[in-house]
Image (cartoon, rainbow, N blue to C red; front, side, top):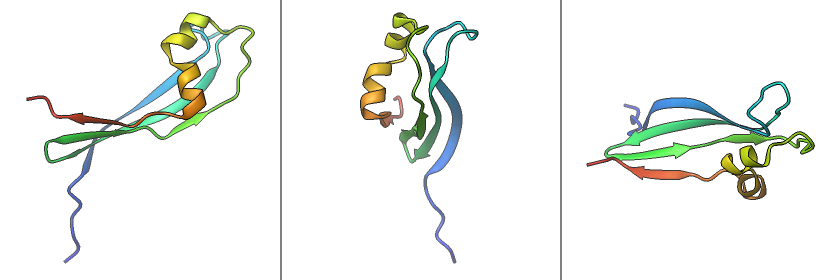
Length: 86
């Protein structure tokens, strides 16, 4: 009998980092699909992401700061391991 995996996806969401909050002038610099899986009492979030080179002439510095552009574009998206709240 095949073994059943214990981890199972419980939610998925799409996350986008943009250069501006105004969609008319902003560009997406990162698109990620966040997959949350549960294995027993432990949750794991995995973020496979695709990053794009964008121009910064119309970029809003505050939007880039909030979306962690400089940190994420340098090293890639982090993985988060979260314990289930008690």
